[in-house]
Amino acid sequence: MRPRALPGLALPGLVLPGLVLVLAAVWAGGCGNDSAPTRDVPDLDVPTDGGIAVAVELRRAERLIAAGADEEAEPVLRDVVARDPDRVEAWTLLGTVLVEARRYVDAVPVLERSLQLDAADLVARRRLAECHHLLGDLPAAEAAYQAWAQRDERNEDALYGLGQVLYLRGDAAGAVKTLRKAERRRGGRADIRSELGLALQSLGKLEESEAKQRDALERDPTYAIAWFRLGNVIAEQDPTRLDDAIGAMERATQEAPRMIHAHLYLYRLLKLAEQAGNVTAAEAAETRWATVLRLHGRKQLARVGLGGRRVPSGTAAERRLRRVLEADPADALSRAKLARLLHGERRLDEALEQYDVLLDTDTPDAAVIADAGTARLVDGDLDAALELLQNAVARDPSLPGAARLLGWALLRADRVDDAEIALGKALEARPDDRLASLALGLAWMRDRRLDAGLHAIARAGWLE
Image (cartoon, rainbow, N blue to C red; front, side, top):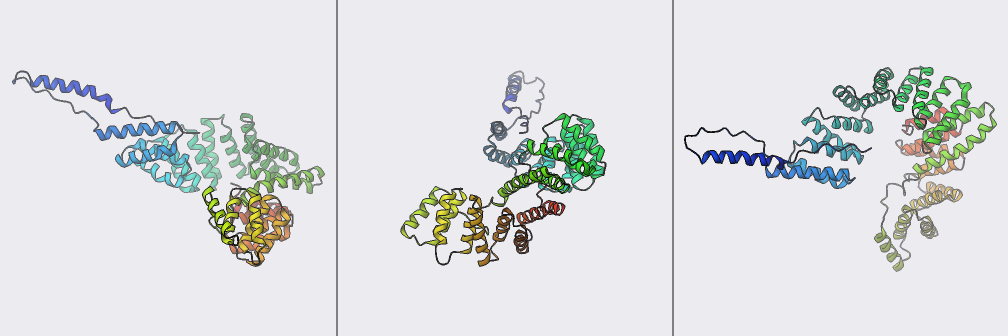
């Protein structure tokens, strides 16, 4: 939700009529008897022409923001703060624009400047706390939420954010205390009650946690996160209530079909039910696994090309490359660039035509083979993708990303043991490859190491 624009300043022109009256009185006194007593002229805060221009520009920025033109408002606001560095309204508006653009790192110093000028600026305090929170700087987020809550004691949002951060920092007791305060401020909010239930679950108060999730759902039956947490706490509280837990988790996926972690946890619950002899759950688990792979596949295949190569784009680049190939069809470098351009634009049939020409040469480049395999994987031709990716890794085991994509393709083919080997090699080469860690966690889950897989996925940051 876009924050309401800050109120504009009074236009400086409104003080001018008063100034005219004062000057007229002084002039009248000066034209009279020289012995008339001198009248004191009040000091008026009359903006200079520069001040008037700054105020007008600030109003212009406010109108642009109200119209949704934040990108146009940003340079206007930067010009305002450059001309008048003490204009707190402009700093706060600029910070808000940067937050809306998700440029949190850029927004932090801007909002800090707002608070240097006006410590009571609650909009800046809110935005600064949110920035630190979203950036994952939990100590700074906690301090910012604390400062905001102290300045605005009745604001449940400040307490809610503080409670979330305390929970993430491992202070579940502090989170419960803070979220209870927020609940007293606004008891009807489903998100506050659900977050309180999560903190209670961390303290082992499972019955009270379940009650809070149900309270949250009474207030908002469409709140997917509460359905997810309800299913989780039921499963932890009583393994014999698997059907109830599965029902709640299914509702979470219905309310939020792209909530990946809900699908993962639902798959885990279904596999547990399968182990308990539930044949229906076994069939449902296979269907859910296909959904998990489809959703995670978007992450694995989001980046076109391997090794951070720059992929050309645009009509002009395509025309240039096609002209080069008309003159010299054997120019493998230009053909590879054209293939990657078409691949990047998801024109897979055209891209594969170019890749096939390259693959027919005597010594195709390993990176080209890997890219062709990736295109086949996106296109759904799993057998061809596996053959190409295995070829690429065999030619160049150090090729960045190839082993991960091979592991992913093997997982898609349900060759779990081979997938684990390929993904292990990928992580040996790049221990910080979060996508490889994600895929390996999924492989472990598929290998019935359900909790180990979830922990691996969580360590990679994919359950946040």
